[in-house]
Image (cartoon, rainbow, N blue to C red; front, side, top):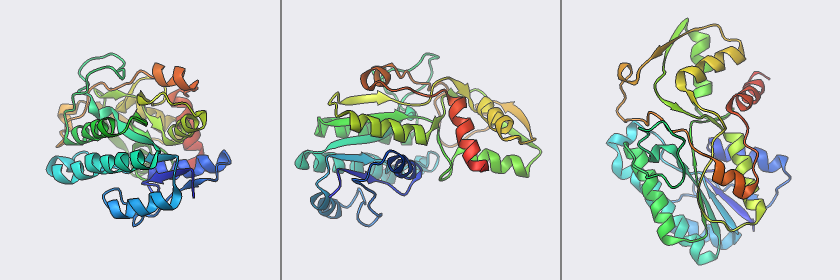
Length: 285
């Protein structure tokens, strides 16, 4: 039996949760393998819940291929909406709290103000739409839930912008990076820490919360900082979204207001640059 079970535990955030749980001395946490923790397999999930009788379930599992999702609505919806609803239903029947990870992509992002949990969600991509549908399915099914919207997730693990920039920066003399999409990077280790702090608080202030690192930055400035901190010599050219067309639209401004999560759980949220330095130091080591 484990007090906490993590779905999607082999991914970037799941790996960070494993690292942070170990550091914090949390032992009653389980990371079931794909065949036991498939959020689309209700029979396997039922067995898992009966085996562990969890008090908390953290859902990191998601369909996150933003551009591919434009051609795979049914697949993205199955994972991001139906999978989330499956977990909510089982949490309800087993008396567990669901901590579900969502995204800033639920917003249209056409207004340059910090987005609050009360602002209207109006996704402009299939990925954002299916993640919003997942949020709504959870809220309609289970009262005891935390939905954590995050953004621009990176870490030492998995595939992410920081690791891609370091790889490309070592291979090329010049890179073109979009400068008119603005948001906030999130170090997945910090998000994992926040999730476990919420659970350890024992509070029942359920609902939607925003979590990213502090500060606001463009992808261009983020790339520049990655190269500066890592000591990578590469020219970086600022380009517009129109100059780098993608199948899925992205929010132009998706920086989120973290007042609610900070005050409710007394969290100290690091500034994005401090966390980036920590991550790059680990990668260099």
